[in-house]
Amino acid sequence: MIFGRIKPLDAILATAEKKSLHRSLGPIQLTLLGVGAIIGTGIFVLTAAAAQKAGPGMMWSFIIAGAVCAVAALCYSELASMVPVSGSAYTYSYAVVGELLAWMVGWALILEYAVAASAVSVGWSGYFMGLLKSVTGLELPAALAAGPVWSMNGFIPVPDFSTGFINVPAIVVALAVTLLLMIGTTESARVNAVLVTIKVIALTVFIALTLPVLDTGNFSPFTPNGWFGPPGTSGMGVVGAAASIFFAYVGFDAVSTAAEETKNPQRNVPIGLIGSLGICTIFYLFVAAGAIGAMGAQPVLGPNGEAVQPGSPGFAAACAMAEHAQSLVCSNEALAHVLREINWKVVGNALGLAANLALPSVILMMLFGQTRIFFVMARDGLLPEKLATVHPKWRTPHIVTLITGVFVAIAAALLPVGQLADISNSGTLFAFLMVSIAVLVLRVRDPGRHRPFRTPAVWIVAPLSIIGCVALYVNLPIDAMMVLPIWGGFGLVIYFLYGYRKSHVGRGVVDVPESDPDAPPQPVPPIG
Image 1 (cartoon, rainbow, N blue to C red):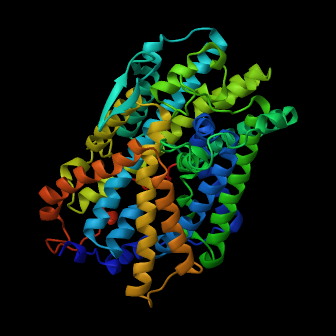
Image 2 (image 1 turned 90 degrees about the vertical axis):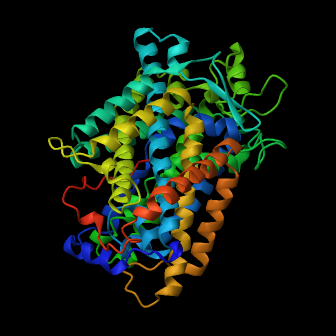
Image 3 (image 1 turned 60 degrees about the horizontal axis):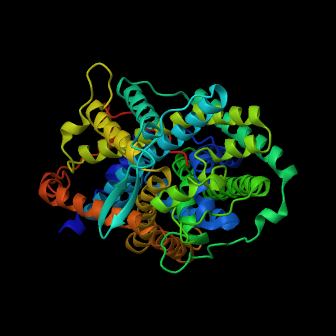
């Protein structure tokens, strides 16, 4: 029975014992770790898309997304402290709810990491082209600077190439990072710390320069598209923007996965999680308030005065109009654009440079995480082990890295950043949903097992996490919602044709792939 195929938790924990780490992290270190992991792509890139969906009401969107993350993080932490090994939610699910659902979680995580890397590549492209134009006056032809916009004809996506054909800078950065990963170049903790510092300083400067020129009139109307969007729209309004802006918080699991190295995890893990999410939410609110107050963040309307999705043909047509050319919602580099508009051109260029320096490292970590999930699934026999072949010289899983990199580059070339982030969120929300269910299942199935961290009020927190994940998922745009079941259906076909027969657990091979000496090193979790 496939639901009965559970990877033995004791075998996984035996491996963890061999790799036991020194418990040295306190609440302050955990909080700073979380802040560094969370602040990143989302706030730099998705501010414009959130404003188009919610207007100034996107400030509520940050609060809603942060609250869902908080309850999901508490569930995540319990399993992370019990199963402190590689594989993230995939491994937790395999040990608790069985192989089939673990496959579905792993397959969703592959979608999450790869599409998120594509989204960051497109975000980097926007800041790169904005900086290039501002400093040199040069710009790429429109056909090479952006991909097409997409609309749905029934269930068939239809491209419109009138505003762009292919995003060349996004392809270049995605393939460059892929090459670095293939030859084994990884960033050190010191370099990562420097990049985190650059991002935090850039956002602090943005807040300091925009809040003094805040105009309260720019906050009205506060929710122009309402809480759930106008009738007949999907993924709009304050809650729709929260579903998109969820991308800005991904990375909080850095705190959860550090439970093994934490002193007194029952006390310090929730402090680190809630503390880092709280600090980042406040940070994001100040950034949003500065952007809204400095130049306004009202959505642009379609040709018939209707609400239009960011990245849609109607949105592209509205942004092509002269009166909207300088709108915040139409910018591909929202924060740098705001600073230039309030006469801080040099500082705006510096912020654009900071984004150009920091975002490739985020692409690297996302590709790294995706490769690790692929690697663990292949070593479990669920995917062909050839995919996880380690290069004899580079000592990296070069085949799966190349396949992933090409997929990421194609998606980055052809899709806008907002759509990519929404698709990535669908996979993330599914993984967090399964983790929240797994916590409850294990509390019933094995209540006596040692839990270094126990989710407080688990029968309240876990259901809240489940409800929050489902609520955000159903408020994604229809096309982003549909990607997950289509991707999942494709994955199930692969599972039943290959993984079901080749599974190590199904064949009675009890092994723990995370202990393999050839496995690539554990990545830093992705940065939102």
